[in-house]
Image 1: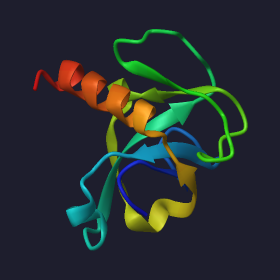
Image 2 (image 1 turned 60 degrees about the vertical axis):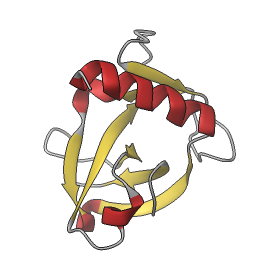
Image 3 (image 1 turned 90 degrees about the horizontal axis):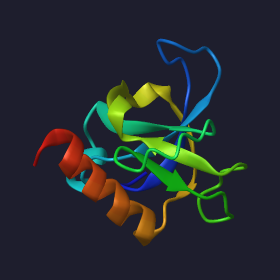
Image 4 (image 1 turned 135 degrees about the horizontal axis):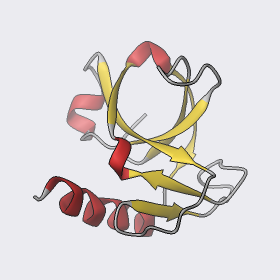
Length: 107
């Protein structure tokens, strides 16, 4: 698991079913830190590109449906909630995620 990995998380507070998420934190912390900072991924597309970043389904990211990365719902999850890594976001998606994070967090 590394920054940009698309994972499946289990046991989210507002959902009992497995959900995809994008790993956001730097690789230097991902290897050992007990929590992982992620942005959930949803297939309920809003097209609000300021803080919802499109991530088209493809073999590389493992998603079954075109979706969006929910920058406005960033969260830290315990490592034990990561069920599996299903793929990796493209460089273009990660660039757009970085831009959205800068807007959302005023960095």
